[in-house]
Length: 639
Image (tube, rainbow, N blue to C red; front, side, top):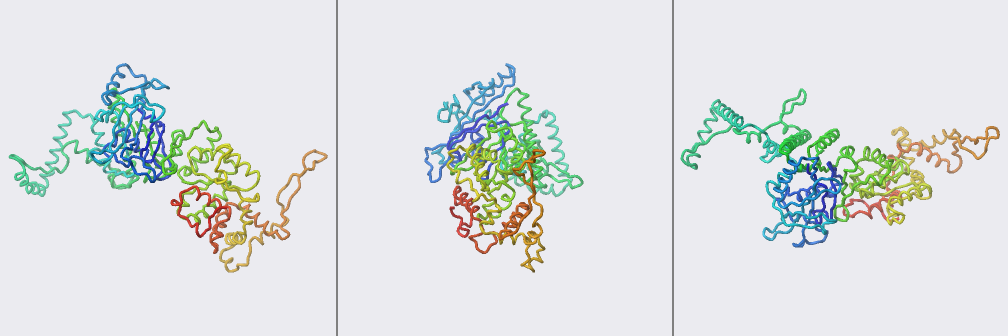
């Protein structure tokens, strides 16, 4: 079977430069407008699958650049033909097919196997005759280390044999079930070309269809009248002996195939054609037809002793289906008789994909960049953690524009509320991820590998700061220049709750707790009622924990422990009681306290200082035009 091994491009669509290796099944992920569909189009252009729609827009133009008519986009594609111990006769047939499809083809043996490789270059440039873009295809004598070092041969023609060699099936995001099924060039029509019906049988079926058509007309006088009323057209416009017929049904198999309907009956429900069902059911129908066609053409070509490229380019195939449907479609695609390249926004697709086959695309400085995960750069424990804690449960991490890593559930619950206050709608592009402590290293390596825009919001204990800085140094290097921009630590060794108290948010914390812990109606009627005061009195002198001392028992020679009790006496007793209650109820209190803070009348105080610093740093790294925020009112400024 023929596969695409590598794709590289220069000045193509959103890629000033591109070089990517493809596997048997490749999954492409990334945020919207990052360049996923552009990569699909680059592959289609490089395989001559869309020569009739070439445009000057296929040439990369940087911001502020005016397209020079001498500038061109170059796309190189390397193919590998897997021989699988073919017989000499089969090899001879394959060679004939290749040279018929690509005259003067230059092949070479793969360095890692005995398989055959060859490469094709496509150049998209300005056509002065049509005043539009055009594509020209060439053979490469050698692949070379880069686009500029490749050895290019003369142009090659794109004929029917070439099209038979490269079977490209593209299903875009704006797909229409009826056209994909019933158009003259639809998958179903193409599959019908490989239906082996004997000529006598085909003729007999045509007679049968014609007889049925006539029987329907004879049974309907109104149809006979319509046919008679149309006769003047034949007499007036036609030559001698002309006539006109009414076909109620298609009278040839080729026409009949274009009116096929698939009837789906769901249990005891009515029998409806697929076009009467929802888009989710239609999506499944499209892929079932694709599978049927691939099976037909694959069987036909392989039975003839040939090999060809079967490439399915599928954009967001999960659209219009429920999460369980995402998984079914992924498994279905992986079983196709084709090399598959799939773009997706589905974390459920990502859960089932092999990480080595995942390509992440991001937009940086106005152009697309490709990133892949090299599993050799991760320990087995790190890979296991990434699969378990990111891919399986936080797959959306790889689709977002900004990621903020934090230690615990308090921050991951509260920070999104402050973020919405600061950034408005753009807050949905920022994901807050609880890493469960200070084990940032695996997450940072993942962020580096996929080019993710990351930040850390951390407690300020000296040991925590040391751990975070160590993880950043191990991943990005000791001299990492953006360390201060990417990492924000709370001051004075504080945790999140201590920082809120230190910054003067005790009234809002107390108010949120009172509303949550006391009956709302009673509290509103008795605003002087204070839950923390009652908690302080109830907990005073209650057992807290046992603490190991430096003393040793003279009898058993073991460390002596002492009991510690809650002590809320003195001027700061109330504050200590409030902090203890918050620390015991982190997850439950995070959102209510954040809501109380962003509801403050003074807009300048709605975001705590260190969180304000985090948002300021995020703003610095992103284009201001991409952020719809309230910074002028919220005073998001540098620390």
